[in-house]
Length: 431
Image (cartoon, rainbow, N blue to C red; front, top):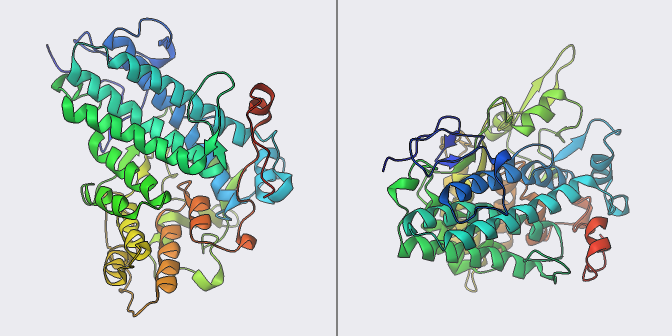
């Protein structure tokens, strides 16, 4: 049996992303637009097709989780400014407060796409468990679990209570339980891979380090749930100076490029990336010219660059710097804070001159001593710069107890489509 041969699936740091492939192996991936989730899921070929569809739902276009989470977090946390008030969903989020209502299509698309990813991932996982080739099955399970965990983590970042199952009249749980459900899904996938290592038949679909990515996401959500020892161990399990990217092409373009190049929806708030003056980036911080540039004619204006510069620009799932900053924060927040090791980890990001994605501050090291609160403030500052427009900023603002005045909104109202169809939908938060 030959390994799968990929023709038009693009991979960066091993992450499968786009449309179709041709293979001499019966386990080839089909165009996900032709994949039927509810039929033929007993075959590895159909499961592979649905798995590609899961990734597409998560990452592609204005309805995908990626764009909508970046937009919602960006406006709500003051990372992004609106350019055209005719964009009503964006206008609501940029205004904030009660202007954000249950009709907002950015929120609905993020909600609906997340649950489509979760539902289809569950179907792939259940059916893959019945495959005879357990090594191929573990690859499928690990792959779709990445997107299931990301989707669970996304909804838990924006809503106070969330369903973690799909179906009719599903119950809601706390957002903390939502993050823990993502961790539980990751643990299940890692156990499947440990019991049956991913087979060579899956090596081309994709040649991602699935285990590395699962550990990175587990570190993220362990941090969000206050499990600092776990966050440390998981971040340490991720290979240094690596990240994972969603990759695009002209047929399946980078949606940030499409939005930024039109210069008609949003751009960075300012050269401080929306941070208050007290936390403004150093003028020598090389991450600022990485993420922003003065562009355009006849008058240049501040534009987003970074991961939005080309139609086929990759968008990271996680950055190497995130793992280091997780360790810095976890050390600082332990029951007995370890401020020495926290500062050591933070300075790895502050002084970094290169990484796999070109994100590097290249600054002199911070020199203490710092109190716990002072060090946490520095960690927040550098997370805001290092992870700009990643969709994580609003979650960070809550965790670091930033003033409400710095936010446009803290938690989101539930889409009216959910409320109309699920009597268990909670009351909307006030802010």
